[in-house]
Length: 113
Image 1 (cartoon, rainbow, N blue to C red):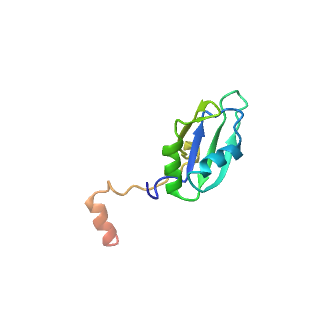
Image 2: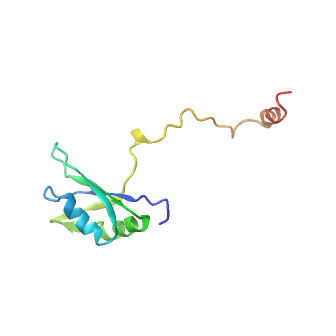
Image 3: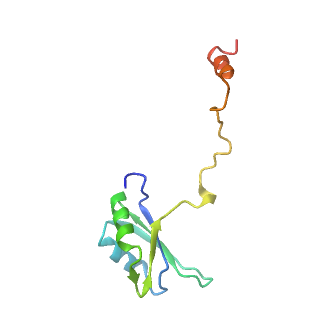
């Protein structure tokens, strides 16, 4: 649960009556929260939110403590927030040199002489 643990958690399967203030109040009991961003789906799906913490350890403790708990009658799903694939770093222009043969490396070392 070190630096690789995100400081932001996804909290899903929320009741439509849940507010950002309530989520912050509940999660703040476990660790210091920076903010909560509630997403209300107009298509009729359950709302969800993202809770950001100051420290990784608070996010980790909240994940363990809150996943599966009932908030306003609904069992919430808590997980680490992930970056959407549309926003992940594009590595398509990266150069892979691990498969180059030893002759190429030798030429590079000697300035193509």
